[in-house]
Image 1 (cartoon, rainbow over the protein chains, first blue to last red):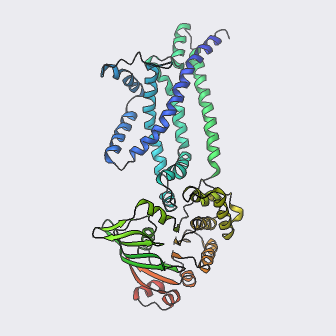
Image 2: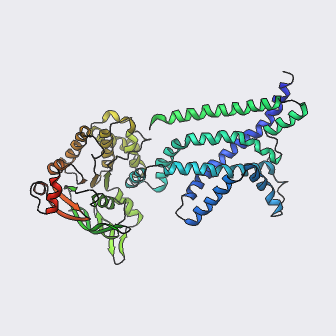
Image 3: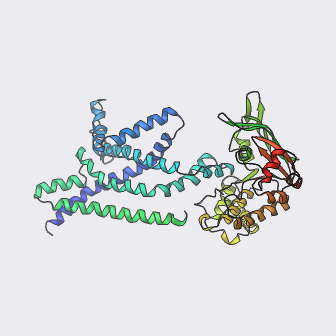
Amino acid sequence: MDKLIPIITQLSQGLVYTIGIFALTLLFAIPLGLLVAKGRMSKNKIISSIVRVYISIMRGTPLMLQLLIVYFVPYYVFKLNLRDLVIGSLDYRFIATIIGFSLNYAAYFGEIFRGGIQSMPQGQYEAAQVLGFTKTQTYFRIILPQVIKRVLPSVTNEVITLVKDTSLAQVLSLTEMFTAAKKLASAQVSVLPFIVAGIFYYIMNGIIEIIMTRIEKKMNYYK
Amino acid sequence: MSVLSMKNIHKSFGELNVLKGINLEVNKGEVVAVIGPSGGGKSTLLRCATTLETIDKGEITIGGDTLAKDSDKGAVYCDRKTLQEIRGKFGLVFQNFNLFPHFSVRRNITESLIHVQKKSREEANQICDALLEKMGLSDKADSYPCNLSGGQQQRVSIARALATNPDIIFFDEPTSALDPELTAGVLKVIRELAEEHMTMVIVTHEMSFARDVADRIVFMDGGVIVEQGPAKELINNPKSERTKEFLAGY
């Protein structure tokens, strides 16, 4: 117990960052993902090609590498020194992490949303059209609510992966939970911090699973 | 007075000419059944009249508003505002209902009344209740489409099409997705509408229904109207060989 308490306190401090990365990434990546899906399906060839390349790069290269690029490119390429930039209590290290994660997850969410939108029967659009709904009304009242139900299982997958991926922020020396566990482990010469960190991740994902299952059940009132 | 007027309608999908100069007038209170073999252009004609497809050439007016006008370069469509007005003047009942599955029966009917027609919620609900009673579905207002039989779903979609108090209702094979037992209920509702002199255009394969309910039958094949006339006459004494051949199959 004497050993556990300092581990839990220190990991909890890292956990704040982990949860911060997680929540902010979802906040930005989900709306961005909707835009990505829209862009990917755009009739404008230039837009759809750009988005296609974007998705391909985001999915085809390691997130860890993307984080490094977001962090270092402003300085090495544009000679912009953002490393001392602080917005509120957030430094560029953290901001770069959020940018990197959001861009990466938006690509995955975008493809999930596109799948959902394209699985909608044409008849739903036609019924809305003859009833006089505008395109925006059709999207937000008719299509999107049904798409959300369809994509929920895949979104849950991504959200769970995101919890675990937050550990990649260590590459920018951000002291999220995994980095904290690593430091503790080498200081204490013990695997206990790793085990505790593992339990923390598992509990977070357990909570997410419970919440998402509830939402899915709630949407089960129609087929 | 003609509620629907379609003049010299041409429509092709790529190389395929689906409509080759169709002329169709539907007067107020008239019930017109459109029959004919699959691929003859019936559904495309209906989709052109209901703004789901755009015509290449020709003229369409609905309820006095011009949807498309002819010009040297082909059909020219009206502006967005008129289009929106026209969409409030007709109703369309689809073959496979196309109800909104995430909305209750009530919301399926009232959603466009509230958000498109800008009626108050109370008024929309009153319209909805009256229509559901007419459809024999008063107890289903809070149900969801997935809990209804096909026949009940189709009656809800008829109620949805009637909600805007349209000048004309189009039916695209309204019973083709239903088994015979459920068909009767839907046909009964359409028959009642005919008795109330609702202006209707019905694409159907139900020949005896067309004969009994329609004032006029239009037989389409190969993208043209082969023959049309008073319902009983066309069914009992078709003039064209092609019509005879088609009707012999029933």
